[in-house]
Length: 261
Image 1 (cartoon, rainbow, N blue to C red):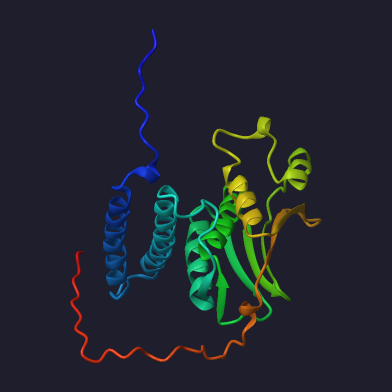
Image 2 (cartoon, rainbow, N blue to C red; image 1 turned 180 degrees about the vertical axis):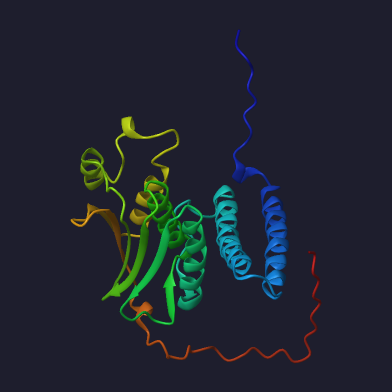
């Protein structure tokens, strides 16, 4: 006996999806607001660290929600949001806070290294970069016994270089050969749901016009590095002042502001 299955229309055809995205953002905004309030209170250092981690993760989740809604509406791709100016110090601080305590929860030690000089502002697709690093760091923590996990960020000429390395047992030879060729773990070696992180990295790196590289270090452990192209606007001097257009003339204009949260 066959069953009748009702197939919903494509999400991008639903006029209510934008409203759902609005409500998701509103709820997340409440959470982020409470985290900011907690941060202003006196609390033990471990609690403050946990709040910082949750805030950084909440900010990343907000960006993913925005992208997901746009993808479902047919207004964006699942790979990229698009480059935009990013405050480098804030980006690096959020990355370090999020993964330092995340690694410590499983007995790992996370370290973020910035090699060389990086401008105060980078024009990058922050969501895509965070997804790449998040998958690589998460894999390094999940697939190794407690050890040091290091992420390195460097700019060389017109390239953004990212690498994540650990002090674990390294990739099995069979995996390493497949990863070097196609950046995928052999299907027969994947756990249930395994391999999705590397597939996401492969998709994102390709969309950004870059290339990944995998190796086992001679001293032990594994390293995954990613090379991404950067535009020349990313190499402005750190102290260069932005050139802003003249402000508009708002004489005799009236403004009504409403907050629906």
